[in-house]
Length: 304
Image 1 (cartoon, helix red, strand yellow):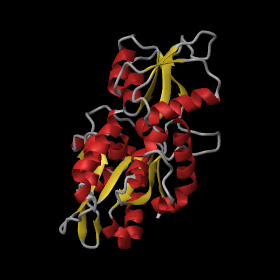
Image 2: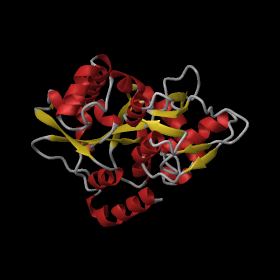
Image 3: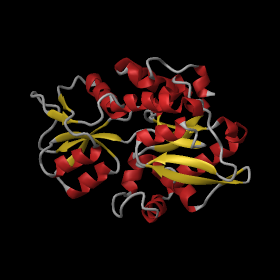
């Protein structure tokens, strides 16, 4: 898989720089473009300060670029998929796990006149073989004994959305904001299943991780407090969050709605609060794709 080949290459090229470096003037926050950025809208509008240093948010356009920044020590705080955080830990890239801010953005969507739970096996389009969307989809369908044929011909969520809107795709897995765009543009589409809940009482899967450099360990409580505040802002004031994200050109005008943000399940929990959820999620990933975690579960140091 491209992700893991890139990770190995970056590790070889950057092994001498594996210790995070902290900029003396600012605390550098790297966030992947997408749902993760929603949780940090407040930080973009009102720059927080930790130990007399402002937090500067930088949007990263791809997981590969995020990995490069972490391996070279160019980020003090980073937001990335939980499986990537576990993989980096297993490869010896030492950042601390602060917690989890997002508990799921994946939904099964299809046309209302073509249900997925029929006798014939419909085609379900999905992107990212071996990644979180793929694994959670397979897990959900196995749990519900659903007949399906998975199709990985589209490589991105945007391509799948375009296929849905063009009538070339009837069933697919999408996350926000592409889900909301598709639902808004085609009234025949509807959400068929929420893939983010392991059971009826769970809040979701711990899919996203926030890491911070060892130099910030003494500031952990202050960082946790700011993360709680920013995540609450996104959920309690979604219109304001959308305004900020559009102003900063993170999302184009009209891409996000309050419903989009609600479906992202934004709720910051520290590593200690979420440890059991994180462990269950990583065990699930390991059952389906051990290589996604670097071949093994992270040890207890991952949570400290």
